[in-house]
Structure formats: structure tokens, C-alpha cells
Length: 543
Image (tube, rainbow, N blue to C red; front, side, top):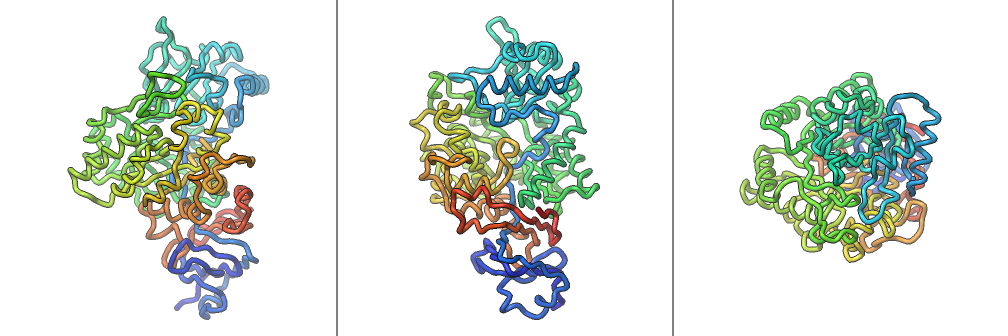
């Protein structure tokens, strides 16, 4: 055989391939893996490679596959950063400080608001922001980008004078005046029509240049995190030009899978456009294919669909965006047309509704290898655990979201669902034990992008700074967490033939770590550092 181009040797290689789980050497030619094993048994065409990288005992894993990462949406360097602001006073101080440092008449935009300073499901108001900045329009994006919070001038600038807006649903007070809180932003605001409306009404955050800047920043961060494939879960055809531009400029380092957003207003003509784009963009570096839908919203503002009342708002169970029968017919039609579906579902009733719809589709169309995904799976009834495996539905989950410092006791999520349902929170191990395919991801910029942070969270169920675990019975092993970020996510996205493991014939997508996560103290997993990231046999990042 022809000599390999490149050999990485002298390390601890965890292949995530059960046929040969461990090695110390990987040989690469033309961007693909051509040999895996131990140096002592390597043939001459491997040892004679012209380029040899000495690993010096460092650890090699398959490149991480982040199954749900909003690289186009955040984080935005021009926004006030509210991550970690755990009180209204802190939010106000950060916004005031930014305003003082950036005097002018234009917009003040902030991101990362975590529903702090509120009680019993209350929503923030324009008056609260007016008290901070009365003389400039202000918009605050929630940390999950599902809601907006605006002051009076912000409402005026966006023309919000009634509930129904192209980019969300504005809450009105008893007199019919907008309160400053806008829900349904993820469904309406991030749609093609919603983003166009925001651009037309002059919101800087929605401009093409700002989107491209966010994309480049996120792509650079992804490859520095060891992520070699990113699944961007919510795009319109308008957004593809951003990725084409990055590719043309040589800045599309990680491979991309783009899902097209299918809001309730999607037309048959748009579905045809989605299918056409899927045939045009279908290579191993840029692929368009899945469709993104929502069945419910999010728990914190009580807009996720629950089977029983919210613990801190009796009589409120949230809503679904579709009636169950209507959603079942929609899923059946899309399944019949061959689409893979990513369905956002956080509440237990929302998740049940999606599983019922997939079951209906299988009865009607017959079973196929669709790999439809339920994304988030935050609050799951025990009775629905076995249905993921039986229906072939993937659980695309974000372990960091389950951390007690984000969602546990005392935080809006845990207080909303109530202690009687805490056992339903992000049931990683239970789903695994019931045979479900787990695909792990960050949901950047809702949470940190680093896969090692997600692995730490999946293994410990503890706060990022350490401390007591929350629902520790749902923790998984390091090997299972690594699998969720590599092979599990590859399988979930029909990529297992060329990525997800270090296997001969697959793409040479690798990450080099400074420590072996399989033997490090679990409390230190988040500190394991990415030293190098290789995509197709090319070093795209070195610390």
C-alpha cells in the first residue's frame, strides 16, 4: 500500500469503535484514516510516513459532533452580556454600565437573560427597563432566545402595538397595552419572515453583517472546542449564503449540517425549496437536509406543554403550537416525503405529542430509518421512556442544561415543574437503559459550547463550579458521555459512515486532549483542555 501522508503516534487513542477500542497510532492519507493500531505492530507504509506527529502521551478522541449548536445566533460581541446575572439588580447594573460606555442614540441590545428577579412565573415589563434606560430603545434576549424583553422606546421602534407580530407574540396588559414581554420568538422571530421583519424595522442584531460576525466567532470557537461537525438546527434558505461565504473565505472549519426551519406558516412551495436545497448541498462539509419544528416552547416562562399544572401557577399547563391530531398529520406527511425531523419539545406533554405523531406516521407510512429527533427532552414521563427506542426516535439532549446551577432547586426551571416532577428532568441514564440513541450537544449559546463541559455535566450532574449533584441517578459514564458527543450524534445525523469514531475508512476528524477523560477525576472533567483539532487530516486548531 502507498505510504500514509501523516501519522499521529505515541498517545492514548480512544477510538469509540468496539472492534478496536484502543490504540496509540492513527495513520491518515488524503484526509481519511487508513490505519489504526499500536506502533509496535505498524507496517512499513505507516512508519515511513513523511509527516509524523508525536503525541507524547496525550489523548486522542474522534472529533466531537455537536448535534444542536446555534452558531449563527450567538454569542454577539456587540450585546450586553447577561450570562451569570443572577438578580435583577445585576442585570440593571450591566445594562447601565454598557450604556455609559457606549453613549449614543441607537439600540442597546443584551443577551443571556435567565429570567432572574421574577416570582411565580411573572414576566419582565417595559417599566423595569425604562427605569434603567428611558432614552434609548432596549431589547433583551433571554438566554434561550425564546423571548424578548423591551423598554417603551424598543416597543415603539419595532412597531409593537398589538399582540400578533411577525417575530413573536407580545403580551398585553389589561388595557391592551404591550407589557414589554414578547414570547414565541424562537418560533416566529427566527423564522424567515421574522428575521426579515426585524431587519426591515431596523434591529441591528438581525442584520446580515451581525449574523455573519456571530457565525465566524462561533465557528472559531467550535473548532477550538474540538468540534469537527456542527449541526445548525434552525435556518431559512436566506441563511445559506452566510455559510457559503464562510466556505468561500476558507473559514468554514468544522463540517456543517443545516436544518431548515419549518414554522406553522410553511407553505408547500417552501417544502419543495427545502427538498431542492437538500439535493444541492449534500457533501461531507456542507449538507442541508433535516427540518426543524416546534411542538411547545420553554419551561421557565410557563410556555412548555405539561400534562399537569405548573407548580407555581395552578391552572396553567402551557400550550402546544399544533393540536395533536393536526401535528400527527403534519409529521406523517413530512415523513412520507422523506424528511428527517428535529422537533423541539421540553414539556412532558409536548414530548408525548411528538411521540404520538411519530407513531401515527409509522402506522400510516410504514416504518423507515427516519431517525426523527426530539430535541431537549427536558421533562419526560416514565411511560414514554421506552417509546424512543421502539419508534426509532433519537433523544438529542444537552447535559449542561440539567446542571443544578442552571435548572435545579431555587432556579426557575425546577420551581416551575415542581419537586414532584424533578425525577423527570433530563433522564439521560433512563433513556439509555431503555435503548434510546442519545445525541449530545451544547445548544450554544444557551449554554457553554465546550463538549468537555457537557461531558462533565452528564457524568456528575453537578454545578460547573462543583458541589452536590442533582438527580444523580440520571448520570452516565464517561465512555457513554463521549459516545453521545461522537458516535451517538453521528448516528443521529446519518453521519456514522464517515465520522463519529476513529475507524479505517472514515474522515480523519480528531481531537487531541491534554488528559484522558476516562481516568481523570470526574470533578475535573470540565478542565480537560483541547490541544489540537484535526478536520480531514488537517490541523485546524492548535492551542
